[in-house]
Image 1: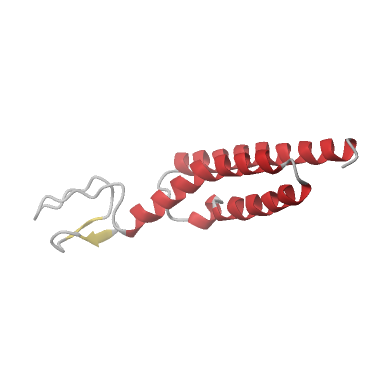
Image 2: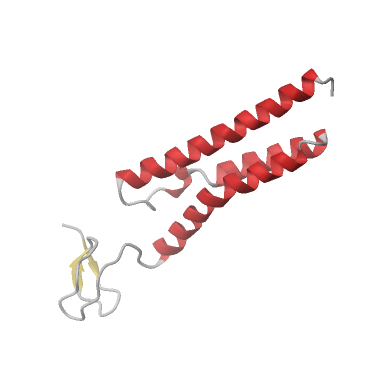
Length: 126
């Protein structure tokens, strides 16, 4: 079994979630230390990046230069929010499936919006 040192007193305990240190009573929580910061960043990117990308592309579709710049920004943000970059942050298979599903669905919708704007622009002669 995997063991770790208790963050409070240093006593060796199991590293499973919910383990209570027999010496000081500290409970191993879902988030411990650096993993909490990384998970928070990952969650924020997963929630806010699609929204920001959608709004940016929506308002920049008036001018072709700003539209293509917003596509570049979207591609960068989609890459930075990819769940593959955050290995070891999720604990369960459910979390992995959930975050990958959200990432894929939102990016597919944004790509469809980009495609529709490009096709609409070509049809109108822009």
